[in-house]
Amino acid sequence: MENSRRDFLRRTCALVAGVSVSPFAVNGTTDAETEQAIKYAIVHDETKCIGCNACVEACRETNHVPEGVTRLSIERKGSYGEYPNQYYHFTRHSCEHCEDAPCVNVCPTGAAYIDKKTGIVSVHADKCVGCQYCLLACPYEIRFINPVTKAADKCDFCKETNLKQGKQPACVEACPTNALVFGNLKDPDSLIVATLKANSTQRNKQDLGTRPKLFRITAKPGEITL
Image (cartoon, rainbow, N blue to C red; front, top):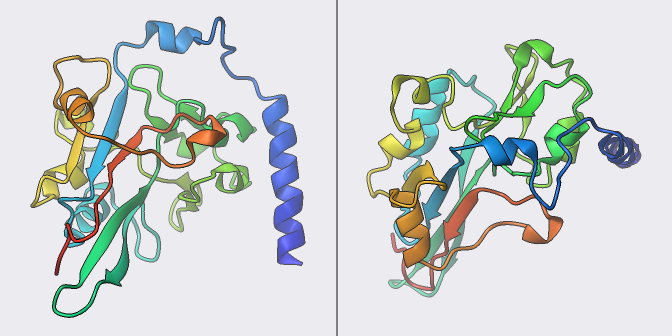
């Protein structure tokens, strides 16, 4: 029964997406992209991540995320190899801040939106009716219903907290190994642009055309050890 319900809602989301009122691309570029001077993104360097979860706890404290839900998690894969040379891989699981975001396309109230100034995918909690279309539409399965606000919630790069104070996102500030790099993709002199130029990176599910802005420097066998 639950699978049937999810299938029905996914089909409904697809139909809503087909008639969604969103910026139409002209020659592959939307009006929002033409005017936008800032396009925030993040890089997770898996070769530096030690899986300490300092980022997760910093996010929770800074953004007042209730227990039982999370905007960010670090998934541990492994162990690989044999003792004493075992190693693990750590992968960040959070909003990918897609440039063509399915969650925004299916939202019937405009609660899910892309901030025109920064490119951050965010949520107007006061507009959210809890229909959960965005949860089902997200191919990365990172959204959740906040048990306090009853609205959809997810990572917003600390848009309403640290960024307003001129700081880096909480996860970036808390990382003890500098495994996270955050910045403006449209600034050629930014650290994130330099990082992307210097490293081979991957993004999840690029074949879907969502154009995610969470980049990964993937760990090679043996690079992460505990």
